[in-house]
Length: 284
Image (cartoon, rainbow, N blue to C red; front, side):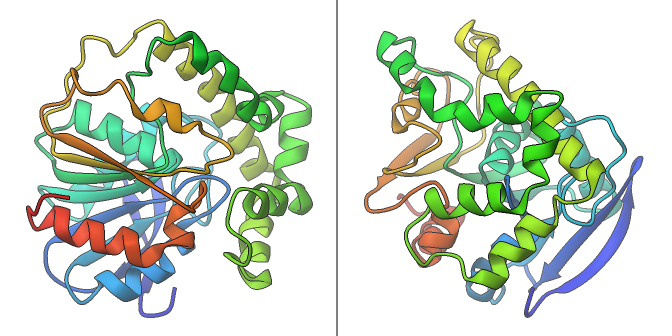
């Protein structure tokens, strides 16, 4: 990313590729699929004057190790704690999108002492509303079921056309230029990274079912949280935004109109404005 310095750092068992920029209070930036840490380019340009930004590639993504196991958000969360330990950072603010957003929620639940504030973008929280109407939204997860297939999944994940289609269909027209699409799609061509994606989506199906069964019903989120959600998300229904109120001490949400799943890339100025306000303790 322009304006950032790349390096690899050993964090527990994992060699993690990170991009760093800026100085000040640390902010961890966690990407989702089908992207890598390069998705934060526009955010880096806006937030680096205020914060020390740390953008890692998640396990199996980008240039971070793909060890063949641990492709689940609980492990992703532990990986981030190992990274903070390696960087000698005690507490951090977090912005997470998609899988990075779900990982952020689990970080807040399992390691509230390490997370100061967090902004989650277009990711479901752990307390889905128990509403029959949510079942009518299951069609949005067609890609997840396809990717989770042991044979079809890795093949699809490694197809650049499939990855580019997910990005372009799920975002406002013109959000991604051809070079960005190539960068993301090509990063999943290595078989070990395509397999990582397939394994991750098998976890997705389990986690979705666990959420409906109430796995996190007794968990309480104490970390101040802001959930931003593109109203026209093609892949995750906006209906999942509701239902957190009785499970979180200090959490607010905002539905962003004229925006899809890739809100960070579609509306980077809005995401950064909200993050600056929220991280500064201002109401949003």
